[in-house]
Length: 224
Image (cartoon, rainbow, N blue to C red; front, top):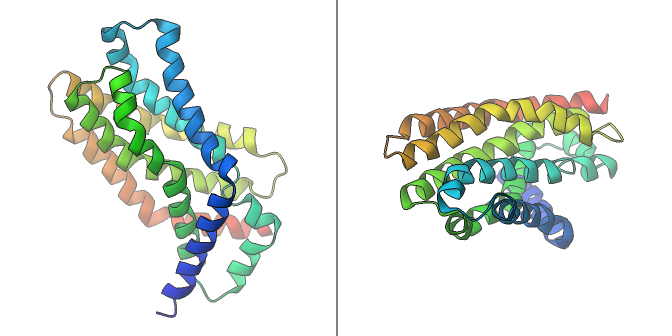
């Protein structure tokens, strides 16, 4: 109980701060929707073409929208001294970082899952393609937040780390993009897509086990 109560306080604080900054909260979501709605206008409304490129478009838009708001994951806390106070408190820094990443996923990616049925309809995805897309998003978007948080922690002390952050993260996200789009393509062909889902799930489990410690170490390095 002595550990759970401070962790819940960190979660409540981050959620309150996130919902107070409504413009920053909606920016990645609006970017995600705009990218996906503009693609059919650019390539034409052909249902076969949309169905073929739809999964890739959704995943590329998800990655780019995550990069849009990722830079501010720890920056405000770093600037106002909250991260330093968290290190000096009796809370495990790894747990604190995990909670912060969890809040970031909830406010940044959870809305994407709710609007995905509309986007799937817009891109003419079939029902098997839609469900495979949902599975990849549910397992893959937390991976984006966890892995991205390591790079954010490493660059949090830099004044303009946004470009460096993108250069660090884009190559790392490529394997996830390949497996996620492959799963949806397999569903489109009526093939078994569980192997790709299992690989993404294994990547997520590994990230949950390792990244909180890596993030906390990177935060300590950034402060020195």
